[in-house]
Image 1 (spheres, rainbow, N blue to C red):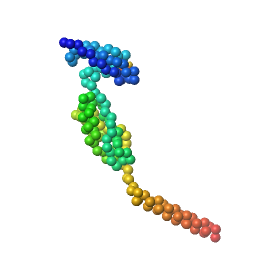
Image 2 (tube, rainbow, N blue to C red):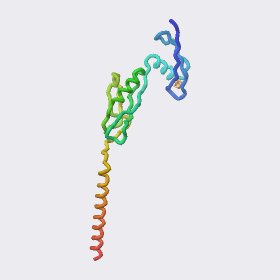
Image 3 (spheres, rainbow, N blue to C red):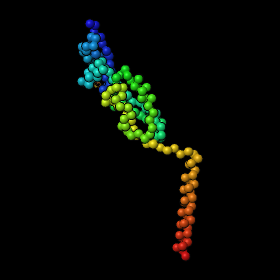
Length: 159
Ligand code: SF4
């Protein structure tokens, strides 16, 4: 069988060693270029079962922000990433949400891999501009009343 070579860049640390994997069909013959075992493991994984962790955002309503950051709790098959992103983007979340809350369980039929919220987002109630004036007016009335009460109290003490 013809021997072929795959080239990868190790992403297990910032050094980024250039890796070479020689194989005949599905059989790995040699891995080289790595400075530590993590590189060899990475090249093996890339060749036999390439996977990627997925982080993105989804639409959320009822919170201060319109996008909620989410991620998968483990790496999913590399050739499923685009479909997975489309699936996640179809989500519509309602606040409140807690960090770590599971939004999709066993994502893409991968047992134990969930899509979770990366941050908490409380529910907020929006106040329309028409309602904004009222509380401040009320506060003003209350403070005027308090002021008059204080004046009355002072007068009583002075007498
Ligand atoms: S092979 Fe080892 S040293 Fe090289 S990039 Fe990978 S983890 Fe880092």
